[in-house]
Image (cartoon, rainbow, N blue to C red):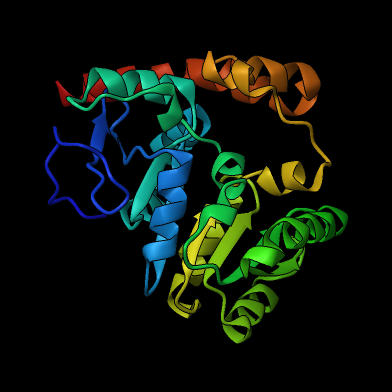
Length: 258
């Protein structure tokens, strides 16, 4: 990640200023959904777009490989209200609720891209991937996007071969955390030039297989409650246990520094 930019000036997709999120030890580059699409459209070479929320913050504290992927990221957008609140405290920039974006927020704005290309969707189940690709073709085909998909249950070599032969310009990697980051960590040297964006469960939302919370719920920082109510078995530990463990990890780390 480019560490040369200075904080305190106006944000733009071409010149976003990293913010250290204390006490988590994270760095984010806040952008809006439209700015993210503009940034994606401007890139050449191999680029990496990640995001941070409390779940990623917890894994970040525990996994060296996970941290290494974030260290090579070109942009790390804010995908979680607590991360936005902490970033506000540690920045001279004026951060608003529009600077907290989920992957579905900027994917929904891809029609605004001034330079559409080949969009590859990697992840989710076979049915969910198929339906997401069909939806994106319907919504983006007229703007010039070509959309291809591969579900997330193929092996590493098949996924890499598909990407290498397909000449993508933007790849949505939706394998869930930390599997998607582990894939990128292991495969990065083999992958072709493109923008790679981790998108978690966004493929299921695009496909219509999961229901998004109303956007006003996200704006007030309560989207996690919506998700917990709709999928308690899968998300109870993430939303109710991991934050407590995260605080413990931070406290232990600070004690070790003394």
